[in-house]
Length: 521
Image (cartoon, rainbow, N blue to C red):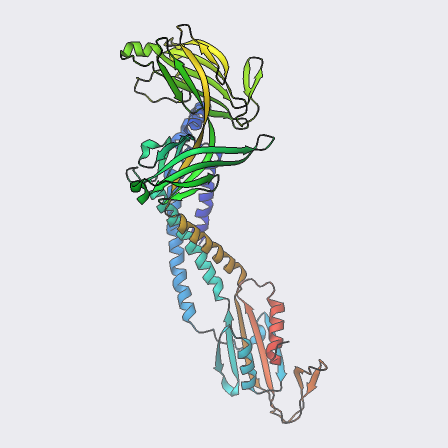
């Protein structure tokens, strides 16, 4: 148990870096910026796996040692508990007066009558009657075994959580994807469909649960302050036999109200805007493109992005690299102009406008290297392979004309939604173990271990004397004298609190009074 407590402390200590420094699994660019900003210290933390805390060797070692320690703690305790359940209550101590709680009284009843009344009163206790020399007899009673049951249940549930968490890390996966809310579809057929994908250790992306989601529309409600009140996406989905029949089922997807299908959960994370530009070239050919732009201000959804196009009909690679276009800049759903600078005053689509630079030249699309869809490679601008040929602020329907006669028109705005697909078959087990953990903890904290002994001994002198009985007259509340010849018994009651001694004194006094009187108070 001491080892388990030390390991729990080390586990909590080891988890601290996960909250203090950026984690590569959540935000790789921020990790790269952190390393660049902190120099050798940042590089040292990288070598020590501080940016991948929960997948690091040292965190996994503590995790596994805690698992072994829990097993090593629970096995002997469970065996001991099983033996104690089969064992008889302990013998009545010879001298009950030495116990922390003790009372003695003489009653006008036989030994059998006293113990029969005590046996009825102690219903629900584990108890056993034993005969003793001299006509005496005693009852040993115990209660509170559920405390250890709750304790073991708590620890087994914790062990179950550890196992379920480990299995979940192996077989779960999570991916994010942006889908235009114009009837565009997303199908969970492979990792290539995701913008980002985090697989479990045993997931290679080739056996995902198949389903499709079509986003037909999106609506958002905002407070006057600009804070979001609700997000709702109207989607259709199909899975299982619906994939073969082509049947689509409607669903209103809301934040924290996921779509559950094919064993996966589809969450609505957020939304943004995708401006549509139409480029008309001097020969009359056209290209229309709608690409999502990313929000840079979550309060007003001021967004930035880059829409990249090739000129149609150009097959020569050299000429194509000289005529590629990029429309980059800012988009404001509710435009506010501060001079010539564009800003957004509200996140809803009330007065859309863009402030764009049009670049022409080599976008680096044929370099074989991945690049962000939200920006252009600045190095291509710096070395002159990309040149700015126009700059303008445009509202819906407005256009700008380039030096070669090409026009760029701002046509419309579409909305996009960010979806997260989560697969974790151990989620139900995690809930079960969490509930069992709470139940076990509550039981172990509320149930108290108690022991009680009652010894009834025939009073010396039989019935030849008149003595005071501890049994009061119910009408008057005082003791009564016992007439000669009446059976008299000396009753001793002793109590011991195995755990949590607080409050047992009053409980013992009340219980011993009831046992001596042979009735409820």
